[in-house]
Length: 74
Image (cartoon, rainbow, N blue to C red; front, side):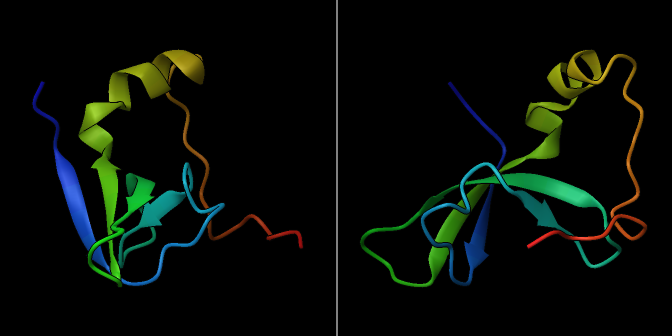
């Protein structure tokens, strides 16, 4: 199986898996899924094109949410 994967340079910690990888324009460009155990500071995300169709089905038509208008809750 081949997948479109984004390699990250940065800290990914336990609990980050399944979270969005957000691009510079505020768009979700991937889904974080793992940190390297052999190379500290390296992590991996699944590119959105790998799950875009599933996401459309899950959201009943693919409506989007603007992350800039939603408040984070701690």
